[in-house]
Amino acid sequence: MPHETSFPIRTFHTDSFGHVNNAKYLELLEEARWRYAEDNGLLKLLNKANLGFIIIDMRLRFRDEVVEGDRITVSTQLLTLGSASGEVEQLVRKEGQSKIALKSLFHFILVDREARAPVPIDGDIRELLLNVIANPG
Image (cartoon, rainbow, N blue to C red; front, side, top):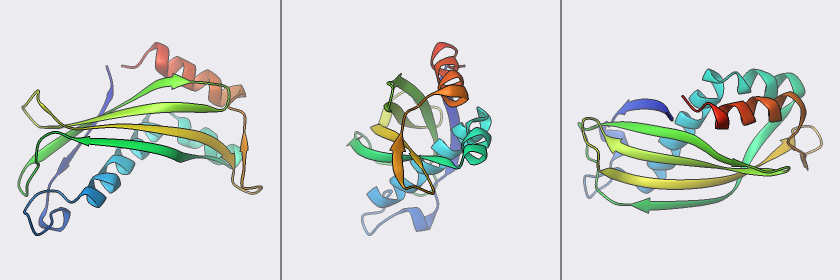
């Protein structure tokens, strides 16, 4: 089962058309990924090693509008993990609905914060992420 994070949609999330602005979706998705990392213990490991993940590619597919007053659930799931990169899928649904409002796929790499250079995904971080893939719930 994917990690789930809920958000109320407020006026500042919406644009002149009255639905969630595409840039605000990126902020909501990022917050959900941070909560996912915190809840899995990943954030603690990254901070200890002075490492971080950066997004190198993203795809968003908008399927249904979300408006002020709606409450959404963001499902976050690590799909794949290679030696140097991985993929996270996030799905947005209005609470109480099965229809997907947004589907996203993010490709990431691990970087050394000080050197500002990519590093392999190995050691404790790799072990934790492989466990997350094997036991997503």
